[in-house]
Length: 258
Image 1 (tube, rainbow, N blue to C red):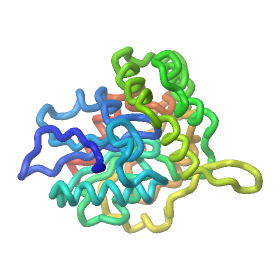
Image 2: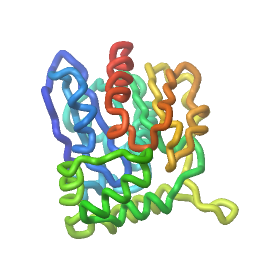
Image 3: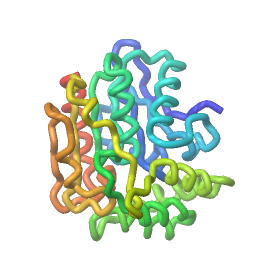
Image 4: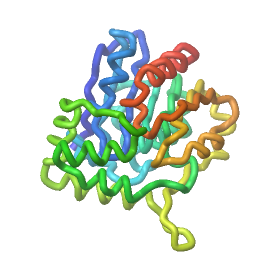
């Protein structure tokens, strides 16, 4: 099965923006940000392997495996140059795509990306990954966001529909296990080869919430030299919902340089 992606406003003259959601999400999760981008921006909005309509697609595994699958899919679609934005796990995948195909990535925007340090609240991710019904998903998402953030009912319903597909939560647990590592009897996440990014040469924007309960904001300091960093005060991990204006601004700024 091939990867599912919603393609909007395809253009032969303008490089598309590929959007990669986080663990447990779906491509539709980007809706608050997409609403704030240019109306005719070409987009390739993925359901990542093992998620949503890509549940049984090839490439289920850790970020490196998924990066390879996304690149292969972009090749299949004939997309030679593209802008890239990823949130959380999608940020780790986007980083690896940029590292492996730097001549094709016009710009890179990372939103609270995974892989920048070992610390991670894996228990919160597990609870979220096992949630199915809208009320359960709301609780799981609230644990990852700043206090008081509300999630739209329609978005919760879309996500619940994806979780109700047979085998969906089992696949998420498989993916979660693939990027967790145990060191000195403590469970953390695998980390990116950050020293390899020092000469990346791609316009890069990094956003992180200062109150992120999943990935500590201190990991933002591990970004390579030359990247523009914006820390969003009091925001949590779910910046697509908590600060969609800031995310859209960062994407537009990165694309303007690319």
